[in-house]
Image (cartoon, rainbow over all chains, first blue to last red; front, side):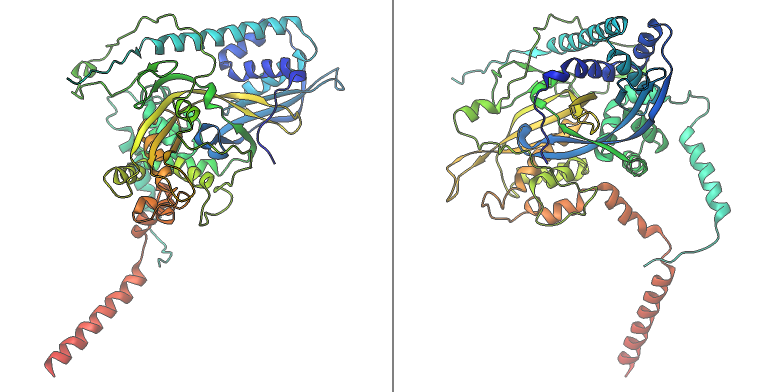
Length: 153
Length: 358
């Protein structure tokens, strides 16, 4: 078994929104759902379940994989009522919040059906995440140093 | 050997009540909320996650509260909780090249490509008690500066790598051994050792790392690069067959550069020691990297003379849940054992007295 995955252009759009959903804060995800108004009913293919993900690093950062701990993760798989044969929605989010996993699964299902309003919510969530990353980087950058070495005489 | 004893149920119940009361402390002070622990005692929470080997800030905060701030007890609680959950996934290796750093330093290169960033460190504080903190509400803020967005953060050790002056990292995608599933066996490969060290006791590894610096298996280390920041976690769910990001974690990575005189097969060059831990755990990551390097003695043809080079000694004693369990089991009833030893001593004494009299 190998542990690396090539980039996957066919699934790039879905990978993007699943990443955005997983990184959204619980309140933001609830807001995104609320903004979409009436949502389709769902059936659980897999009701929300919390378990562990084994986390891996690489020796020296780029070498052989090793296990360096575990994290809690919650998953959920849904079907949309009235469109049972259509694509299923998957939610995989770190932590133990079952509502978050369920919301992520529901949004994955409607996003696969090309729901334009949902796409706009993803854009909005992603913008908030990009802003958080930029704010953290800017904060950290205030402590950038310019070392200089004193020459001994 | 200890034996089961009956009775004491009422006393145990009372002890639990006393523990609850002691945990709560003075009822006139407000009770600690988990959010306060998670956001203000961050480094306690980080240590509990690292050695509890479970990344979940809320659970670690709960464990710290329940354990009255005893971090080793909190680590035990987290490990126990972990056994109640099924394993749903294995992650792809986290990409620390793509880390979003909040701190990044090198003691080997002052002009690190991408620059050095101190971040929230104790390093340049005066270590004087700050009585202003005793009065609530003091807070310093910094004006953020425009930071140019950075793609991947180049590694300090790449500079040496390009010159061929440091050992190459052996690339591999082999599935690593997992000591939570298979018992530790010797000799242990490096991936297994690193798993053990990542969850090992910080104090134990710190002492061992310190011993290598003081001459017990000297490995002449330099902190090549230390970085703290956030990395994405990706899994490949079976049903989907492609990588999915499930969130991000904060980690500390330490790459030590160590002198190596060379051997029959290898020219003189620098070698590497590696540390990677959950959260902001710089001291632990550094100690881990020192011990990782000293445990490579066999592979590098160095003579094993010191405790930090003895993998059986290090790996068998690094886990504080096991260590604390075995030390503390001495409190369990050993009445029968003790009685037999007591009888033995009395008999020997009696024999000795008789012999002396004869």
